[in-house]
Amino acid sequence: MGCGNLFFTILVTFSVALITYNIIISASAPLKQDLPGPSRSSIVDPVIKMPQERSRRYGSGDKRRLFHTAVTASDSVYNTWQCRVMYYWFKKFKDGPNSDMGGFTRILHSGKPDKYMDEIPTFIAQPLPAGMDQGYIVLNRPWAFVQWLQQADIKEDYILMAEPDHVIVKPIPNLSKDGHGAAFPFFYIEPKKYESVLRKFYPEEEGAITNIDPIGNSPVIVGKDSLQKIAPTWMNVSLAMKKDPETDKAFGWVLEMYAYAVASALHGVSNILYKDFMIQPPWDTEVGAKLIIHFTYGCDYDMKGRLTYGTIGEWRFDKRSYDKVPPPRNLPLPPSGVPESVVTLVKMVNEATSNIPNWGS
Image (cartoon, rainbow, N blue to C red; front, side):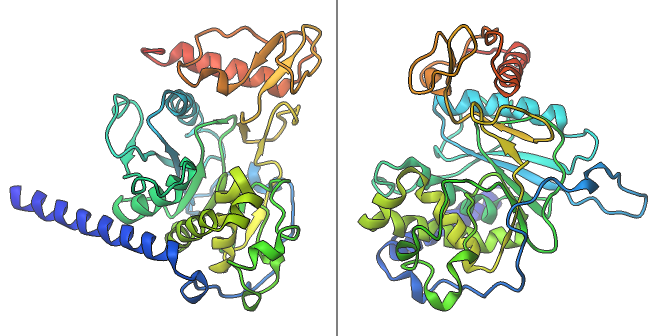
């Protein structure tokens, strides 16, 4: 038993050292020489609604296409309370109608266990070497995925990459199809607008700039085999983009999202774009057929239910208000007139916090 543990430790240490070396080399070497990028074999409808066949149930001869939900996170209070809420709702909908939801993993890139290991299935990933993220902690995300995909025993054939500030509102089916990923289109990811910058990482011989989808890495459902190829490229492109002053200035906080879109295109993995994959309050006002609420924006309203975005409202819910302490149980509900999406979000946070043991501890 002792020899086996020693061998495993040596193997993991060697693997991490090798990948770290590759990170350092790729951050300083031209990417163009090393990154594969077969051209696309087909064109995907740019933005489509949720497929009607969602309502189908599997027949006795059908094989379910389960996906594993993976969420990267730090050990901060801010990330942790969001993960706890997210996992609560994952469990509620996992076995619901039309669900293809399999296992769940919080990929914790702090490099050490925390006290929620027994509450949330967790994989410990090592952070980037000191200083390599240049203060942009999101760069730990692709590196964490590389480690998880290399070391974990993932049973499912597909992966849903999600984030701590996602609240699942319905059972999620596997939306990927025919080798394509399934992704949410972000209006602010604009490959055509930034073609001159992106050509540094996606040269013309790889194909049209429109091969780069307007996506981030989340939410995305993609084949595990595809992601195993994409992840190291995503990591290398992220580091190279951050190192390039022009690219860093152009993309700012969405740099890593562009890097995933580029990496996916370089590997010839196109994405079906589902606008109903998620909503982002307060701009999206109805839940409808959507599957995820992404609470990335603050929600500020006066007591007449009018949005006061940019000004702290008389009523507000903003995740950034809870960066040092988790939100208390029983948050006050929005005033009359506030959109359904915001009301639903607060009610779901309240239900989770009311039922999660030791909340606030």
